[in-house]
Amino acid sequence: MLGYVTKVAREFVSQRHEENNAPLLYVRIQIGQAACNALLDCGATCNFINQSFMTRAGLGAQVRRKSHPTTVALADGKTKKLLDRYISAVPVYFAPHACEPVTFDVLDTDFDVILGMPWLSSADHTINFHRRTLTIRDATGAEVPCTIPPPRSSIRCQVVSAKSFRDTCRSEHVEEIGIALLRTVPTTDSSSTEVSSDPLVTRLLDEFSDVFETPSGIVPDRPISHEIILEAGAVPPKGCIYRMSEEELPALRVQLDDLLDKGWIRPSSSPY
Image (cartoon, rainbow, N blue to C red; front, side, top):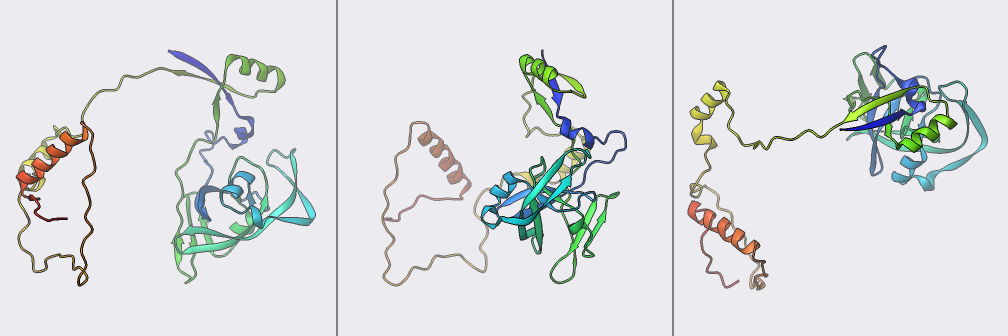
């Protein structure tokens, strides 16, 4: 049995929700080729995007400098950040046919994207924090439900060495410490194809045994037969059979024999 001491990241302490049962609300979004869970924050006066996700989304070339930088205070009320970069009118997909331009300030946080009041206050967005639902209007005016990820733990734990933990306690003010005991649990070698012992399932398997059995033989003739029509005068290119290893060849032979027995294939006499 191994014991690890975990240090709770202090920047997440304010996000705890065990006492009031109010986990943070996220929405799944797509920007360019990158996707993330964006935090819906009614306490944010701006929309924010962090540097890492901005790079993944390929937005680096769209960053602009503010002529008049602004200062924002973070949730702890003490830490202040100077915002001097922004990205204007970024196409954000909330659903396949629901895309909106959103302007972001660049802020290095632990969240990829934060959608604040400039986005939340739109009449096209219907948010229910109690039911954890969000709908937006697409280009046709129809309401489209967005993908809301399930609640997740908002406390991040890190596995650290004893030396690192000791140094942290000396240099920083640690507000909370948790201990996790890890041990190896042997796994049972049970096949996923085992027949269920549930009487109801067994009865259904017996009743519809012809459905679950592997079919044999070819399918009956159909009104339409599939064929590949070659262009006039076209000749298929000849190709040699590639070499196989000693392990691959017997496996191929077993598969071919099985398909031959079922009547699904037959020996080919094609010169190609």
